[in-house]
Length: 532
Image 1 (cartoon, rainbow, N blue to C red):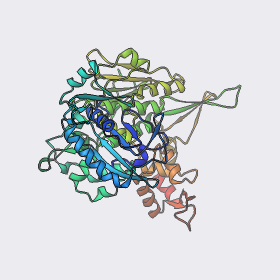
Image 2: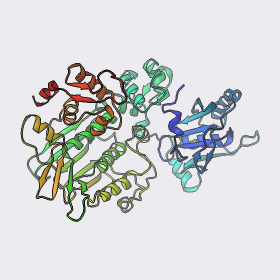
Image 3: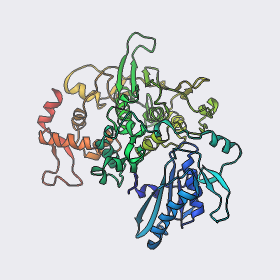
């Protein structure tokens, strides 16, 4: 059995105990039992959590190297955990227990997903005479016994499981794409990536917690279909992002629409990449009294990224309404359905202080966090406020109605910036302009550098790579950065191999193809291909 994320991710330099992570220097069965109970209850629908046994903590942070667990105790502790799930919790509950090694020490990692039959209660003591039971929940980095209003609210969640964590009996294991699963595991650097290529889908799905049910009737969970099926809209209609451009404003007669579908991670990235290339421009304001110029974006991309990821995370996939991104010269609006949890107050949201009591999609948030698309800790709205202020833009607007039927995030355009006009011209010059490599002087004061022109069909990644190589040779890492991606992708590697084979690009260090200093430059043949 392997964890879906590497142990190093749980213990990296910024790791800190919080609602989904707890460190234990030694084996304390009662404390572990109560924390397992709290993770199983998943009071805020965050997806359960992890307990790392064998790692001490100070002020919530892991102390490394780890203390470790004695090798001859590993098997006995695992048997004790199994017994605790049978006899000391109701209903029965069993976490996934994985032995790990770090710095020559043995660790036990307990992965405890939110349980399907909450609420769970655990014994208050492990003595033979103890007959008292209690409900436990997580509050911040602490496990506490649920009492009063918390206990009443927990009981109201009885047998309710968030939609994304439910099994889908209209699907079967064949609807899960092994290729998409392996690609995801590789991207998040999971130790499960290697074994995932050959593991039976039933075992792989159980290890990732994307399937459930008895062995003879195993079904995918909704979250598995949303991330690892090529066409999730077949199961969840309107699972899509509609990007709509209104050149004359929302009241005008003209508009262009681009619809993005597919697995949630890919769909979100493709929609954001399209918006970045077609509707984001940078304006450079030169000042007569100093050498430094001020650079602003019409819409800060980081704010758009957060708003769209927030919509993907929090929308309902039971409702047949797409996410809409509506762009005009004056604003960019992200609409999703329905609105936020009843615990969220509009005035707190607008001030960036809203803390929802629970999240609608606990598992979607878990996968988006692994893909570095969201933090899942109520940081989205404060980040949007912060980046808009840093860009000098007007304050964003957030809104929802009393019945929570929709949620709107509106980003006003920076008053000194414009969405770029459609660039004219053909051939190499037009391609260079659309890639943002040609600047235009406006009124002697402002230089507008459009990243792309609005168009119904975006240029291929291959053309974008060729365009970026026009002026200067670039490495894979430099190409990745200029393309706006976070990591060197398999798709980029494939395109570079093809361009090399077609002699459209060549190495700068011809005799050492694998040199760490290797870069790629455009050939005369590549220049011809670019202007065709």
